[in-house]
Length: 244
Image (cartoon, rainbow, N blue to C red; front, side):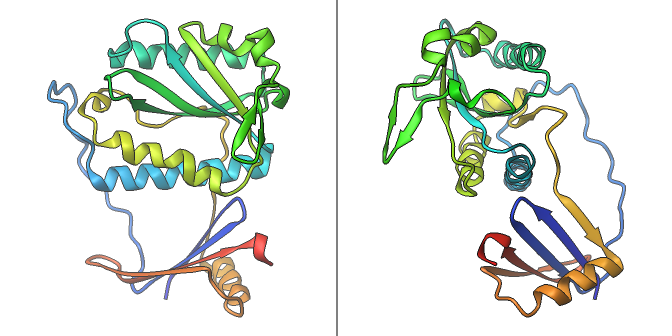
């Protein structure tokens, strides 16, 4: 049976297919529609998966990121304006810190105001506040210098240090499911990732079989089975290198 292995951070995901996967070209969706609808559930799940894999891969490659929140000082109900503002911030961030990489997800407040949750990699961690137990100590240099807030330039920025735990990937990706049902966000990207963010490692064919054999003697922390009309029975097993 065909096997695919995917590695992102400490996670090893091994997928076994009943039938050989084939590439299928689908017709492109018609562009230019003015009808804004909530994102489809399958698109939300796919985007959450991409987010989790990118975050865990980046933590492994770059180390601990800053957890930041971007809010607007004035009106924040225009999706196009919010999208352009975020893009400009990412450009200015890269100009200030040439190796900086970032990932952002929008959220809509109860009052209908857009703000962003995100992670910044390869920026000074001293800018963020320190977590102690359930609370944060306001000791980050960002509170004094406002260097990131000035780069943002549209309002306020809150920065916190993180420990790079796997839970961080699940925490940040939950905002995708939360915002995916908002019609307003259909006019913008629900997940904005800078170009230098690493992707998961994908292994197929002979090498994948060897990896599967190696992990077959270990206990998976999670298993999933499903059926697909094109691929037949699909089995997924998840392993963590942090446990070995």
